[in-house]
Image (tube, rainbow, N blue to C red):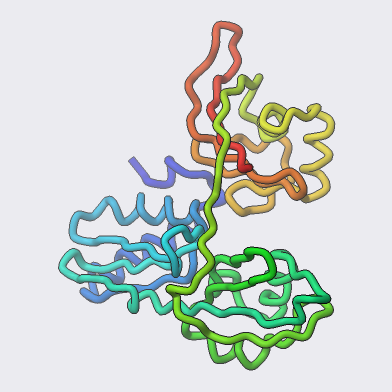
Length: 257
């Protein structure tokens, strides 16, 4: 059975990259370090590498609770340590008395540097403290180029990974029934919205599934999918438990507080 059958067609490109990484390690007998991967990409990578007993995959994002992580794919005898992931942590200094910096502003400024999203890990914000993880290979460039976020002039300094802000995510688990697993139907159930309102949010480009923008109402959701809607928060489909007697899908999901 082909591994492609387990995933969506739009994920084929990443699956092929993951297969290439695995084959490189198998033939070169050397570790391979990836960019930062979102949780969905991590799941796919583990499925691809899991087909080989001789190849292991280790994940680390800079701190224990990180969402985005780099992967070290290596022969089973290789002992990966934290330095192998080549991750830097930066703290942003700005005039905190006069300005508030938001996650989207930090991400927008980082993307404006002309680097891929995969070169950056989590953005951490607690009160007026703002930090972000970056790949070591672009650290010097970011230090020289990042001088503003929004309207604020900023400076950044590298700090030890041990000083990362610890973010604790809290989820409220609930069971729902949905008429179908279409994205608009699932959003309506999870967020208690009308079908029309759900379709509007999708049409406006405010909905992401597994960190990818989805603009198709009929996109079919699956177990493990993370759905985020700008202004409404994030949900995760924890399990799909089959159909009820009324031919509806019973779904267990977590809503982020």
